[in-house]
Image (tube, rainbow over all chains, first blue to last red; front, side, top):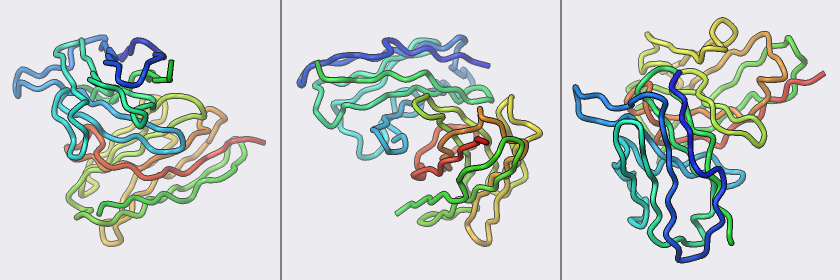
Length: 113
Length: 119
Protein backbone atom coordinates (compact mmCIF):
# COMPACT_ATOMS: atom_id res chain seq x y z
CA UNK A 1 0.00 0.00 0.00
CA UNK A 2 1.10 3.58 -0.58
CA UNK A 3 1.85 5.27 2.74
CA UNK A 4 0.92 8.94 3.02
CA UNK A 5 2.80 10.96 5.60
CA UNK A 6 1.73 14.46 6.53
CA UNK A 7 3.77 17.05 8.38
CA UNK A 8 3.34 18.46 10.86
CA UNK A 9 0.80 16.46 12.86
CA UNK A 10 -0.37 19.65 14.52
CA UNK A 11 0.29 23.33 13.86
CA UNK A 12 -0.36 26.29 16.14
CA UNK A 13 -1.15 29.28 13.97
CA UNK A 14 -2.27 32.89 14.25
CA UNK A 15 -5.17 34.40 12.34
CA UNK A 16 -3.95 35.97 9.13
CA UNK A 17 -0.85 33.76 9.06
CA UNK A 18 0.27 31.81 6.01
CA UNK A 19 -0.04 28.08 6.63
CA UNK A 20 1.70 25.23 4.83
CA UNK A 21 0.85 21.55 5.26
CA UNK A 22 3.00 18.90 3.63
CA UNK A 23 2.07 15.47 2.35
CA UNK A 24 4.57 12.88 1.16
CA UNK A 25 3.72 9.59 -0.53
CA UNK A 26 5.87 6.46 -0.29
CA UNK A 27 5.76 6.15 -4.07
CA UNK A 28 4.85 8.45 -6.90
CA UNK A 29 1.15 9.16 -7.42
CA UNK A 30 1.75 10.68 -10.85
CA UNK A 31 0.53 8.97 -13.99
CA UNK A 32 2.45 10.04 -17.08
CA UNK A 33 -0.31 8.62 -19.30
CA UNK A 34 -2.62 11.46 -18.34
CA UNK A 35 -0.12 13.84 -16.75
CA UNK A 36 -2.04 13.89 -13.48
CA UNK A 37 -1.19 13.54 -9.83
CA UNK A 38 -3.77 11.33 -8.10
CA UNK A 39 -3.85 13.32 -4.89
CA UNK A 40 -6.72 15.00 -3.04
CA UNK A 41 -7.01 17.23 0.02
CA UNK A 42 -9.85 17.36 2.54
CA UNK A 43 -10.84 19.56 5.45
CA UNK A 44 -12.65 18.09 8.43
CA UNK A 45 -14.20 20.07 11.26
CA UNK A 46 -15.31 18.46 14.54
CA UNK A 47 -18.49 16.41 14.19
CA UNK A 48 -18.59 16.87 10.43
CA UNK A 49 -17.64 14.68 7.48
CA UNK A 50 -14.59 15.59 5.44
CA UNK A 51 -15.00 18.23 2.76
CA UNK A 52 -13.16 17.99 -0.55
CA UNK A 53 -10.80 20.91 -1.16
CA UNK A 54 -8.60 19.79 -4.06
CA UNK A 55 -8.29 16.89 -6.46
CA UNK A 56 -5.64 16.15 -9.07
CA UNK A 57 -3.39 17.83 -6.48
CA UNK A 58 -4.24 21.39 -7.50
CA UNK A 59 -7.78 21.52 -8.92
CA UNK A 60 -9.86 23.52 -6.47
CA UNK A 61 -13.32 22.13 -5.73
CA UNK A 62 -16.17 24.50 -6.44
CA UNK A 63 -16.83 26.88 -3.55
CA UNK A 64 -13.41 26.53 -1.92
CA UNK A 65 -11.98 29.99 -1.15
CA UNK A 66 -9.00 31.01 -3.24
CA UNK A 67 -6.88 31.56 -0.14
CA UNK A 68 -6.46 27.77 -0.33
CA UNK A 69 -4.05 26.34 -2.89
CA UNK A 70 -2.70 22.89 -3.65
CA UNK A 71 0.62 22.12 -5.29
CA UNK A 72 3.26 19.47 -5.80
CA UNK A 73 3.95 16.48 -7.98
CA UNK A 74 5.22 12.93 -7.78
CA UNK A 75 5.69 12.23 -4.08
CA UNK A 76 5.65 15.68 -2.47
CA UNK A 77 2.59 17.85 -2.10
CA UNK A 78 1.59 20.99 -0.24
CA UNK A 79 -1.64 22.57 0.91
CA UNK A 80 -1.29 26.29 1.53
CA UNK A 81 -3.65 28.71 3.20
CA UNK A 82 -2.50 32.22 2.33
CA UNK A 83 -4.16 33.99 5.27
CA UNK A 84 -5.70 31.83 7.96
CA UNK A 85 -9.29 32.57 8.93
CA UNK A 86 -11.13 31.31 12.00
CA UNK A 87 -13.25 28.99 9.90
CA UNK A 88 -10.11 27.27 8.60
CA UNK A 89 -9.33 25.72 12.00
CA UNK A 90 -9.80 22.04 11.26
CA UNK A 91 -7.97 18.81 10.49
CA UNK A 92 -6.63 18.45 6.96
CA UNK A 93 -6.04 15.15 5.18
CA UNK A 94 -4.34 14.23 1.96
CA UNK A 95 -5.42 11.14 0.02
CA UNK A 96 -3.83 9.22 -2.82
CA UNK A 97 -6.08 7.49 -5.33
CA UNK A 98 -3.33 6.36 -7.68
CA UNK A 99 -3.31 2.80 -6.36
CA UNK A 100 -5.95 0.66 -4.69
CA UNK A 101 -6.34 0.71 -1.76
CA UNK A 102 -6.67 4.43 -1.64
CA UNK A 103 -4.90 5.74 1.45
CA UNK A 104 -5.00 8.87 3.55
CA UNK A 105 -2.43 10.78 5.50
CA UNK A 106 -2.74 10.80 9.28
CA UNK A 107 -4.08 14.34 9.30
CA UNK A 108 -2.77 17.75 10.31
CA UNK A 109 -4.64 19.67 12.97
CA UNK A 110 -4.62 23.46 12.91
CA UNK A 111 -5.04 25.14 16.30
CA UNK A 112 -4.91 28.75 17.40
CA UNK A 113 -1.59 29.96 18.77
CA UNK B 1 -28.50 19.25 -4.01
CA UNK B 2 -26.57 16.07 -3.41
CA UNK B 3 -27.55 14.31 -0.19
CA UNK B 4 -26.18 11.12 1.30
CA UNK B 5 -27.82 9.77 4.44
CA UNK B 6 -26.38 6.75 6.21
CA UNK B 7 -28.28 4.50 8.58
CA UNK B 8 -27.98 1.11 10.21
CA UNK B 9 -25.21 1.75 12.69
CA UNK B 10 -25.38 0.80 16.33
CA UNK B 11 -23.97 -1.42 19.03
CA UNK B 12 -23.09 -4.98 18.03
CA UNK B 13 -21.28 -7.75 19.84
CA UNK B 14 -17.93 -9.06 18.62
CA UNK B 15 -18.50 -11.65 15.92
CA UNK B 16 -21.81 -10.10 15.00
CA UNK B 17 -23.10 -8.61 11.78
CA UNK B 18 -24.55 -5.31 10.69
CA UNK B 19 -25.86 -3.89 7.44
CA UNK B 20 -25.34 -0.23 6.71
CA UNK B 21 -27.41 1.68 4.22
CA UNK B 22 -26.89 4.98 2.43
CA UNK B 23 -29.78 6.80 0.76
CA UNK B 24 -28.65 9.02 -2.09
CA UNK B 25 -30.45 11.90 -3.78
CA UNK B 26 -29.74 14.94 -5.91
CA UNK B 27 -27.75 13.16 -8.62
CA UNK B 28 -28.11 10.30 -11.09
CA UNK B 29 -27.09 7.58 -8.67
CA UNK B 30 -26.52 4.78 -11.15
CA UNK B 31 -23.92 6.71 -13.12
CA UNK B 32 -21.55 7.22 -10.21
CA UNK B 33 -19.31 4.93 -8.25
CA UNK B 34 -19.72 5.00 -4.50
CA UNK B 35 -17.45 4.23 -1.60
CA UNK B 36 -17.49 3.60 2.12
CA UNK B 37 -14.86 5.31 4.25
CA UNK B 38 -14.55 4.84 7.99
CA UNK B 39 -13.04 6.78 10.85
CA UNK B 40 -12.30 5.21 14.21
CA UNK B 41 -12.95 7.50 17.21
CA UNK B 42 -10.30 10.21 17.33
CA UNK B 43 -8.43 8.68 14.40
CA UNK B 44 -7.88 9.28 10.71
CA UNK B 45 -9.73 8.18 7.59
CA UNK B 46 -9.64 4.67 6.14
CA UNK B 47 -11.09 3.72 2.79
CA UNK B 48 -13.22 0.59 3.15
CA UNK B 49 -14.78 -0.35 -0.17
CA UNK B 50 -15.84 0.94 -3.57
CA UNK B 51 -18.45 -0.14 -6.11
CA UNK B 52 -18.86 0.93 -9.72
CA UNK B 53 -21.96 2.70 -10.93
CA UNK B 54 -23.72 -0.39 -12.19
CA UNK B 55 -22.31 -2.58 -9.46
CA UNK B 56 -20.24 -4.81 -11.67
CA UNK B 57 -16.95 -4.03 -10.00
CA UNK B 58 -16.18 -3.96 -6.30
CA UNK B 59 -13.01 -3.35 -4.33
CA UNK B 60 -12.13 -3.69 -0.67
CA UNK B 61 -9.46 -2.64 1.75
CA UNK B 62 -6.85 -5.31 2.37
CA UNK B 63 -8.01 -6.19 5.88
CA UNK B 64 -11.69 -6.32 5.00
CA UNK B 65 -12.00 -8.63 2.05
CA UNK B 66 -14.13 -11.61 2.92
CA UNK B 67 -15.89 -9.98 5.86
CA UNK B 68 -17.50 -6.94 4.23
CA UNK B 69 -19.66 -6.86 1.11
CA UNK B 70 -20.59 -3.69 -0.73
CA UNK B 71 -23.67 -3.59 -2.92
CA UNK B 72 -26.13 -1.12 -4.40
CA UNK B 73 -29.74 -0.87 -5.52
CA UNK B 74 -29.86 1.64 -8.33
CA UNK B 75 -33.64 1.42 -8.61
CA UNK B 76 -33.92 2.81 -5.06
CA UNK B 77 -30.78 4.94 -5.00
CA UNK B 78 -29.27 3.03 -2.12
CA UNK B 79 -25.80 1.85 -1.22
CA UNK B 80 -25.17 -0.94 1.27
CA UNK B 81 -22.36 -2.39 3.34
CA UNK B 82 -22.85 -5.82 4.85
CA UNK B 83 -20.38 -6.31 7.68
CA UNK B 84 -19.78 -9.74 9.20
CA UNK B 85 -17.46 -11.15 11.86
CA UNK B 86 -17.10 -7.73 13.43
CA UNK B 87 -14.31 -6.98 15.88
CA UNK B 88 -13.54 -4.06 18.15
CA UNK B 89 -11.20 -2.74 15.45
CA UNK B 90 -14.23 -2.16 13.22
CA UNK B 91 -15.62 0.42 15.66
CA UNK B 92 -15.85 3.64 13.67
CA UNK B 93 -18.05 6.19 12.00
CA UNK B 94 -18.85 4.86 8.54
CA UNK B 95 -19.32 7.41 5.78
CA UNK B 96 -20.72 6.79 2.35
CA UNK B 97 -19.14 8.99 -0.28
CA UNK B 98 -19.75 9.79 -3.92
CA UNK B 99 -16.79 8.76 -6.01
CA UNK B 100 -16.86 10.69 -9.30
CA UNK B 101 -14.12 8.79 -11.09
CA UNK B 102 -14.32 5.32 -9.41
CA UNK B 103 -11.61 4.45 -6.93
CA UNK B 104 -10.82 8.14 -6.82
CA UNK B 105 -11.45 11.13 -4.65
CA UNK B 106 -14.75 11.79 -2.85
CA UNK B 107 -16.71 14.91 -3.69
CA UNK B 108 -19.71 14.40 -1.40
CA UNK B 109 -19.94 12.67 1.97
CA UNK B 110 -22.78 11.68 4.21
CA UNK B 111 -22.85 12.61 7.90
CA UNK B 112 -21.85 9.09 8.86
CA UNK B 113 -23.26 6.33 11.03
CA UNK B 114 -21.50 5.06 14.15
CA UNK B 115 -20.77 1.36 14.51
CA UNK B 116 -19.66 0.23 17.95
CA UNK B 117 -18.44 -3.32 18.41
CA UNK B 118 -18.41 -4.22 22.07
CA UNK B 119 -19.64 -6.86 24.47
